[in-house]
Length: 341
Image (tube, rainbow, N blue to C red; front, side, top):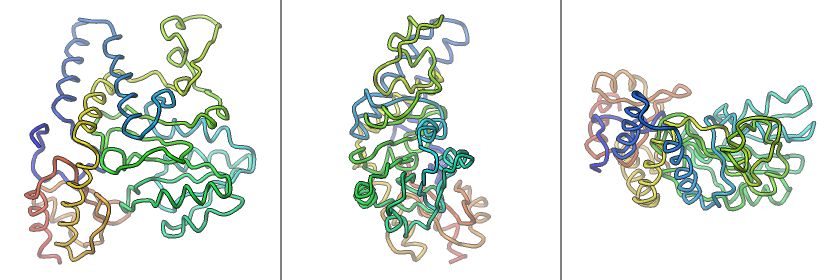
């Protein structure tokens, strides 16, 4: 793909994605204008609308049900705040803590978080569970959630499904069908600057949640709500907006639109082909994930010596493969660890 400029050996999109040229160039132009005061901020903010609409299309949502912010944990907080005392939340034992801590901080009012291994999650969706809070793709292991099974089990008992899709949107096809909330940061597989988070809230969940972080940007008339005590919030999910970090969204809009243009199914095929080529070279079975996590003593040092940038998570080597990854990257990585296999 000639839209990116990766230095060979980048196998760490699960930590952060590399910006496509249109995103990088849009960000540089905005920074140049900021430096000399060439424009007001409103043109930068138009990117927030573009990015919101692009994200909505990517997950099959109505843009009116999508809110923007800066972090996953802040996006989950209004949902956790709306839980009744004594509610029980089910999560994965390796769940990234941005989708765990916002629930756990309510322990003083009896909210309980129950964590089970990934393979036991669906079976643990039983009466008494009020929320299933889980990642569509796990950060540490790369495990892909059986989302239809989770949705079906949750519907049977009336539990909410709150999905962290940070490691999924951009390469793994999914929609908000049957999901009450879907939150994703865009700086990984959506290849945007850190600071642009998107969240879907179902209309029924919007009614249950208080927009406790509401500010001027959450108003029906943004530009008419700078001062004073008169509050008229947006009737849709935008009332949960946090005032956006402008430059993050300037970079996010072109990146998300490029993902749309290429197509998530196309990206998925590319990523899985390379990830499974890497797995085969390690003697592992094929998988449905763009993230490969494996115990391989000495691999971190071997990668570093060969100029391969990957990660170690939960004691395991984690390599991740995206649209700008090439077969040459895979072969370089396999050559680096070949003496260890």
